[in-house]
Every structure is written in C-alpha cells, then in structure tokens.
Image 1: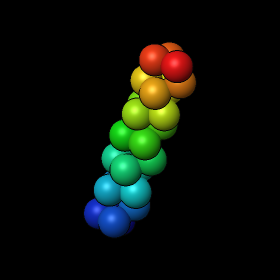
Image 2 (image 1 turned 180 degrees about the horizontal axis):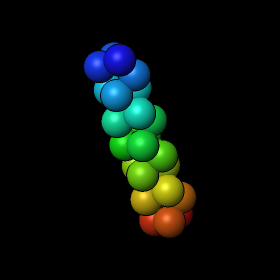
Image 3 (image 1 turned 45 degrees about the vertical axis):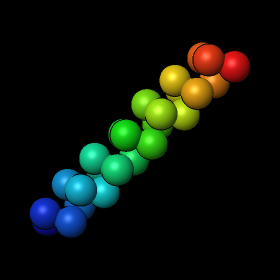
Image 4 (image 1 turned 30 degrees about the horizontal axis):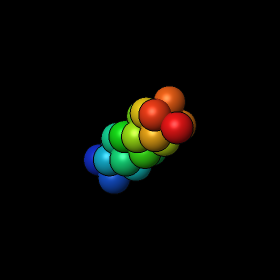
Length: 25
C-alpha cells in the first residue's frame, strides 16, 4: 500500500510540473 502512496505523489508532482511548464510557455 505504501508503494501506491508514492505512486500518487510522483504522479501529482509530475502533473504540477507539467502545468507549470505549459503555463510558462
């Protein structure tokens, strides 16, 4: 179950970075 938690953390971090990147562009 802990691995699933980290999976969510990585996905959300990636999404936030992607949104921030597209916002800069």
